[in-house]
Length: 230
Ligand SMILES: O=C(O)CCC(=O)C(=O)O
Image 1 (cartoon, rainbow, N blue to C red):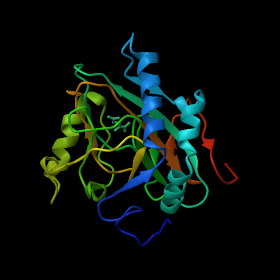
Image 2: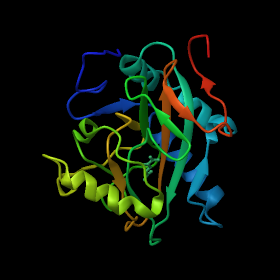
Image 3: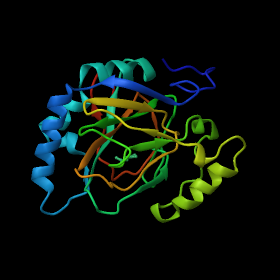
Image 4: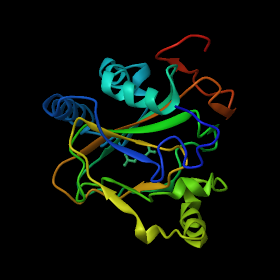
């Protein structure tokens, strides 16, 4: 639950919760295979907000165990603010630099009333470009937001902050069908897929009422999952 006195944030000292089951592994892998077949020709790497148009993504963001974990973190009323499907193709250079999910050019989320989920649709391994996170980096708060091109500077700022070095980051391989939750301020990244098969993952930003501090008026509206008053 949200708490004004919890200085560790909604997910505790590491800023991360692992082991959330959102799908049976076989069903998740079958979905990954279908997405790979659908997008292989153009090697599409990113699909924005698939939960608004694809039934499978809509079901994923409503998965009961995932919702229970999200509600445990930010309370009973939740909405999806944004989803982001990332497909990493073997042999193609594609890295996602250090960033915090709760802040970008479009939006800033209240870290006590938002949480970010990353769902492994395929298996995510060290070789195929799993996430890496800097545990505890949410204690830094939001770093001055920079554009994609400036993410190296963000890493530098994290390194300079007392007690943190991005060299100490932790790799987070995940089995298909599992998910992790991240504090909206947690620094994370992912590397290029050097494996044999495609890696597919879905990032979801959930918010509780009042969880958006700043928003670009052009943004798609919130997609309520539970509760009223949105
Ligand atoms: O899927 C990935 O490799 C990283 C996605 C991510 O970090 C994000 O969407 O915030």
